[in-house]
Image (cartoon, rainbow, N blue to C red; front, side):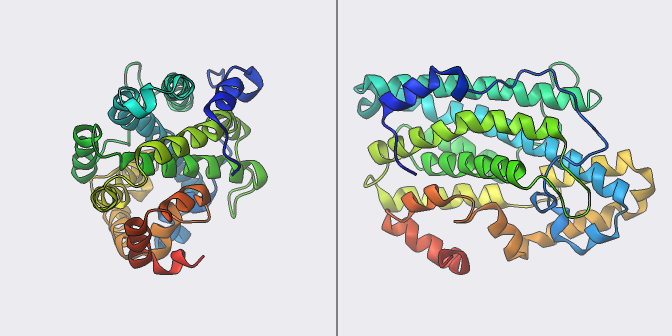
Length: 319
């Protein structure tokens, strides 16, 4: 990624051709899948192959709504915990162009939140009545602790910037994959409305990655590397944790409500998710160099973080 300056970022942000429009209206085809199947959790379990086509389709759509919710969570909770304090940092405050880029990014993330919420409500108004934007992505205790720690510590330790960049690059990779490979393994072609939503999101996220990189270089790299690495590792542990009360399990329970014939299998389906805790391919599918090359390039510049990645993801570290 050829790094853009803050001035170049601001010029792009002022050009409607390079900014997102996610307000709808949405013409959603619920006979089609929304996301590639390998972006769902049950896909990595033996149980997935035992579901009927109709059940896999419904699961795919529900999990895609959960993906939207999780992006919304990051673009509200994470942004609110991290970016306002950065605007008060002298290393950012003293750079008018970078400060303007960060303020624009905050505004854009709020518009993204509204766009994803509107899509989810248009798709399943029964799950998202007015005033309720989250059905699945209620954070488990481990991640609530991690986000709380992030908000408390962000004024001094900027480890959250690594996480922010990785998650934004992950959403960028998902959007590009859907645009270039819109055909799923077993469920047909992706719904154009869902793909279009993420294509619009991609416009802003591409710029945001440059802002993240500038902030990391300005405020994080070389500053307390061991402490920031330790805090980042705790944050990632919470993000990758699979629990019986997490968002993935909530998706399965809603699938059972939508497909009552699955009710006798609900405990086994939930158990299959819990077994993903030991599934390396699943964990690496969420966090790896292939989908986050720019993030990992910056991770490698901090020796304690590079060493942690080599220990915890030894196969991926060589990819």
